[in-house]
Image 1 (tube, rainbow, N blue to C red):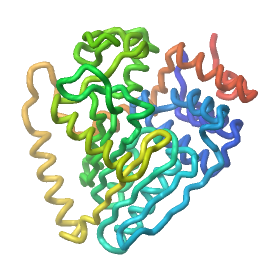
Image 2 (image 1 turned 180 degrees about the horizontal axis):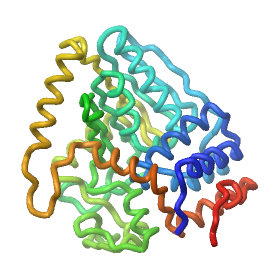
Image 3 (image 1 turned 120 degrees about the vertical axis):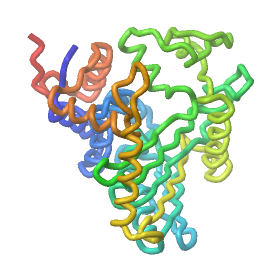
Image 4 (image 1 turned 90 degrees about the vertical axis):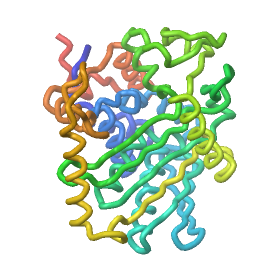
Length: 344
């Protein structure tokens, strides 16, 4: 199994995107998000997505050079149209727009439509939190093309994984980032287990006959997700679906809302930081339950993974490496040469 350093991973992502016709500034944003996810241990939304992205470009479903257009709808409200381009770049633009509006008038809601896959959405909520904002990013609307989650009490899929990400500043603890699918697990996590040849935990999926399964292949053979936490994930998923479809119109992938609030409008940043740190330390001081070493804050496992992988490298399952290598050949690249990989 190859072990790639952050620099190798970054070069791999950039060279693949550039070879597929992506401008340098768009490449920087897209590669940064994918590599960041891989470093944080969120492999399902990391560089393993690149073969799919290149396939979508080759099919004409994604224009790698497309730039989003921002339409002002009202004070505090905007709509970003992705123009069939990279979803990561478009969601970055939507987030920047929401941050800028909130900085001027305290809060913002920005819709994003007509773009491709947006990667790890916690990345964007976290970026806003680092600038002193509360952020909520959520989306859906793809029930016509990504119908793979059953409703609570049902055995036929009707919506997709419709994720949410919340983030707030956490003082010395770093941003608090809550990022989850409204299904028990995201598609990409199942793909990771499949690539690693591992069985799924019980309670993640049903097979195409509506029966519980732990075989990842069953999911990709017409299987389906269960909603997270039963009726709770089901309810959140339906709200995201209504926003993504009924509000923003049928999407090519997902449509999104980005909501930001300038917390300094309510209380000075220093006072907020002191209160946040006091509470978060109170949480960290809770004695761990049996089987746990400590209580972790949302976002903490990802930060620790990034620290470890920055030192030790990112493991690359053979199946993922093969898929990336094939993607490289499709655009005239030998990835082993690109990253100077020593296979001895």
